[in-house]
Length: 213
Image (cartoon, rainbow, N blue to C red):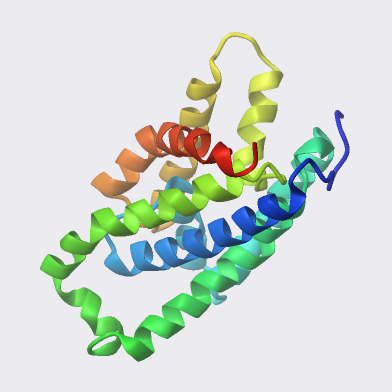
């Protein structure tokens, strides 16, 4: 185990603001991606697949999954645990539940608004931008990461054959496939996310580092 959990790096206040804004934007984007029904990131695909078999809200199912994977992180690398870990693990899913409830109140025709396929395709790109920007912001804050995002780093550190990019893609595809088998949304957007969302988030994350440098 390396480092200490919940360390407070330089510009801690800026980092906290970036992390909070990032989690809120990620939840906003994810709630819309789920409603668009055109695909989500692999982790959400898995969560939605599990939710098909458990009569609980998205936030509660995500929390249970995070708690299980969190055990692996605790025993392997405590340095990955921080305020961002807790925010992503506990707050993100319930914010998705809140935004989903909100769309049913404010959008034309409630959630029936998303039955319009043309509107869904028009919204897809801006919604993906919001989701990616939010995920990049919470990671760029450097205050810890979710167990889902942290485990690929741990797995990569335990072997030398595969690059981190390869480990991350295997990780994402594994969750995507299991999620799809459980009934989660699998389509072209989900597959594209498994291939590209990690590198894209990493690129945006580097650009956002100016806020904490």
